[in-house]
Length: 184
Image (cartoon, rainbow, N blue to C red; front, top):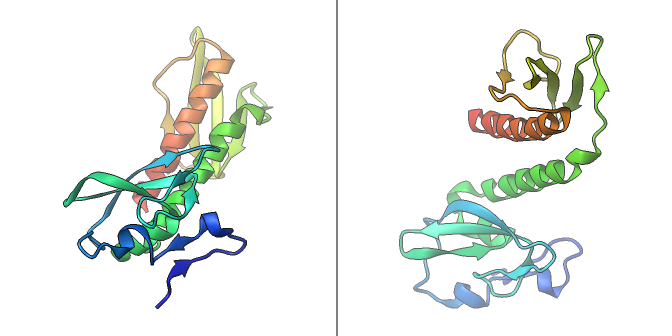
């Protein structure tokens, strides 16, 4: 039987062990866990509450009917506990990390100006336009290179200046990405 999950280049603090922590408690549930949310520990890292060995930055919060407070676990323990959705934890963590990267780098993005004078950017498969809307600015987001209104979202909010509109565009981008993920 395998006693540890080790990734390429993992040091001992990153290894999820099946022979330690709650894995040794036979009364602790091994199935029926559902994903709730992520906790980003930043540079502090936290210990996986299942194996009590791995230090993780992105902890998966899992909930269970028999464990009302839930547990914070690393990716590999999340995969082992969610046998019915084995690939889900890795996909969710990848999406979460990608969303975090987008948010952190948004202010560095270079916006372009269209032929009609609107600020626009192509980001992560979406075309985002900022246009004059009365005394302020509006935001439109669509799937990039598709102009048949298949996926177009107009932000109902009016922004007072271009800087606010660009921050609003980031929020609309994150919402659009989440919506397309739900659609499958």
